[in-house]
Amino acid sequence: MSGTKKTENPSEERAPRNFLEEIIDNDLAEGRHKTILTRFPPEPNGYLHIGHAKSITVNFGLGQKYGGATNLRFDDTNPITEDTEYVDSIKQDVQWLGYQWKEELYASDYFENLFEFAIKLIRDGLAYVDDSTSEEIAALKGTPTRPGSDSPFRTRTPDENEDLFRRMRAGEFPDGSRILRAKIDMSSPNMLMRDPVIYRIKHAHHHRTGDQWCIYPTYDFAHGQSDAIENITHSICTLEFMSHRELYNWFIEKLELFPSRQYEFARLNLSYTIMSKRKLLQLVNEKHVDGWDDPRMPTISGLRRRGYTPKSIQEFCARIGVAKRDNLIDVSLLEFCAREDLNKIALRRMVVFDPVKLVITNWPKGKVEMLESENNPEDATTGERSIAFNGTIYIERDDFMEDAPKKYFRLSPGASVRLKSAYIITCEDVVKDDSGTVTEIRCVYHPDSRSGSDTSGIKAKGTLHWVSTEHAIEVEVRDYDRLFRVENPAEEEGDFLDYVNPDSLTVFPKAYAEPALIDDANEAAASGKIPHYQFMRKGYYYADTSSTSDKLVFNQTVGLRDTWAKMNK
Ligand code: ATP
Ligand code: MG
Image 1 (tube, rainbow, N blue to C red):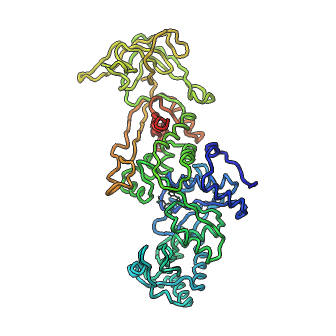
Image 2 (image 1 turned 135 degrees about the vertical axis):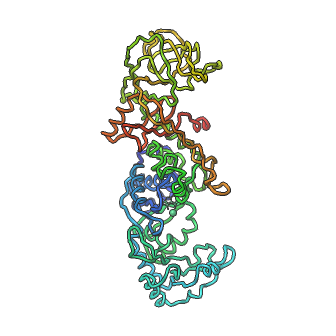
Image 3 (image 1 turned 180 degrees about the vertical axis):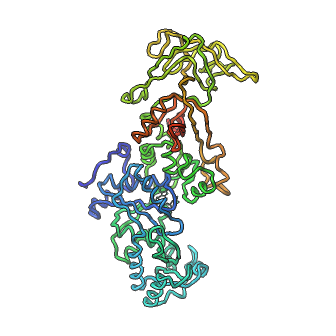
């Protein structure tokens, strides 16, 4: 195994070998392959989701680990639901996740090869054209416990079959009038081996081949043969394809192709969301979300827009490993991985979501003081920023309580708190409007309590974030909750749409932020590098795609609270 390369990813390094790695190690040791070639085979009928990310990290990860490679193959054999919009988004998402494919390929590029493979099967007496209706075919199929019976068309001669199949291709017959079936075994215990369909007539426009074809191969006839054409050594798919493996091998054997082999692992299921492209499309079409890249969607593009990093998604996939049994992964593990990465890279900024005015009565009139504050205490290279302070600020409305209980560590009459990077203040009184709502909090500050040079000896109960009323900018902030109210919406009774969480989005249309966010936005526009933020005491945030320098809009990536780490202590 001299040709193997070590992984660069430390999280994979510490993990024990998974069963796929054991298989590959074995294949290389026994000389079955000199190097490995895997593929990621999306059907371009939707945007990729976090489940696909799992498949991407497995396939590309193995390619990298063993010094082999991975192809990106669009499994585009179903003309009706496929589109180039999806092709483009898939390529963008794979690259964004940090992977580069060896070749970009399309199953539709093999339509001619696949047609010739079908002709070979026909000539070898291993495929036949069946004129039966789908009801007739179903009736003869049998059940898992009862063998099926032969179609009356099963005894057609190779010549007759070839003639009919070529005429199917030529467009002589309407949709659904005939199919091509492999001739295998109508009494096989594996239902898929009971003369499976390999070609159907569909007079449909294909996003790549246009109107060139009116017959299309089935998944089973296209997938393995495409693997073999590309010399894929390990064709990794999810467990539901287990029963297809026998058929996969049958085609490769009868057509005498490169011996690609199929291996199955468990799909990733994530709590409080769904993983089916069909259902995600329904959420988009029926406007439950704002598009495929809505930050609440489990799509790669949604996670990106929300502020997840490729690294956090890779780490998540590495931590869940490669399982052989289906399970439901807690979404809080994904959030944990996001926090872990964001804590290291996020710039700290202060934003007040629900402001109430606070006036420091003993602040010298007209004085503006510039305070220095670290951009990121986890990363000294990010330096400091200056924040203007002039004694009139906004704090969060819920950081003040008039009749506070003993354990309240924020502001209340008589209590002292520290303003982050500034001074300790003590609350003296409040101003209220007619309805009793507090409109202004009045405090004194302690001049000798400045952060970094505090000699006051005053004990502050807590530290509050704040923004200067005069310098603050107005921004919009969007907080997100889970898209579904239940852990596993796909398993619930009735329509999954009934379980959509109606409160998954909270908008703060007029939050106040420190002006550094404007400088950041300008820098990002110039460099193309959009910073991740920790809005202090709030969570991690990322500029939305709709954000402009006139109106900054931020999405909550994830809150600060860490339930997963606590649960697993
Ligand atoms: P969906 O059911 O969401 O439409 P799919 O399996 O039809 O998914 P494909 O485009 O065919 O989507 O998937 C491309 C690859 O990604 C396949 O190899 C598939 O097995 C894998 N994949 C899809 N969903 C998951 C998942 N939840 N976990 C792991 N791998 C997945
Ligand atoms: Mg599929």
